[in-house]
Length: 263
Picture: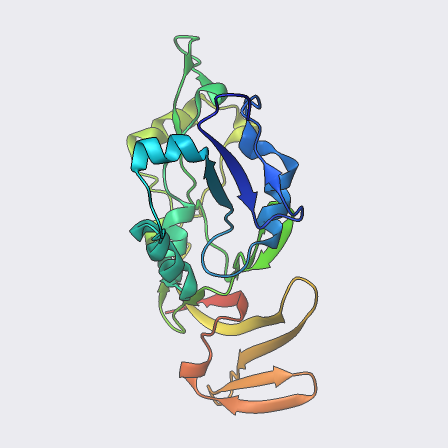
C-alpha cells in the first residue's frame, strides 16, 4: 500500500465496507476480517472469501493496455467446486468403514520410539476391530465445525438392511504381527475369542434413529423392524406407521442398530 505499490488487495464481502490486506502482514489470511468474511459467505461452494485486486491505473495500462470494459470470468475450478458442493453426495457404509480403518502415516512430530533400535521412527497407524459384539451400534458423524460455525452433514449413507459383512474390517490374527503378543505382560494380552465361539461376521439391521433439523434444533424419529411380522415401522412420537424397506435408508439416518446373524 506504500508508494510505488503495483496494486492493493481488498477483501470483498466482509462486515466492514472496505478492508485491505496489509503487505506488511506475514500471514494476511489469518486476519480476523477473513474469519468474519468466511462466516458471512453465502451458498455456492465451500466456505470462501473474495479478494479484489485494485491496480494502480498507470501501472495497469502499462502492463495490460487500455481496457474499456472488463469481464472477469471465474476459473473452471470455481465452477467445479460450486457444482460439487451444490449436489448432495452419497456413500456406502462399507466405504465409511474403509476410511475409518485406513492406514495413516504418523507425522514427524508424532514419531514412534522403536523399542529395539531406540530411535524415533515415522511409523504408520491403522485401526482394526479385534472382536465384534452381538449388538453393533454405529453412530454416523452428522455434524462438522468450520471456523466458528457448525453445520449438519446430510450425506446419504447407504446401508444394508441384511447381511452387513464386517469381516473385512476385523484384524487378521494369523499374520506375523501376532508373534509380538508373547512379549507383552500377561495383563496386557488382548482379549481372545474362546474356542467354539461363532465367527459369523454378518449382521442384520433392526432399528435406525433419525435426526431431523439442524444444530439449533431438531426432532428424533425411529425406524424399527418388528420381530414378529418382519415388517418395518416408523415411530414419530405417538404416531406409528408401516413403511417400505426402501424408505428406511435416508439422509436423516443418525444411529444404526445391527444384530449378529445366528446360523
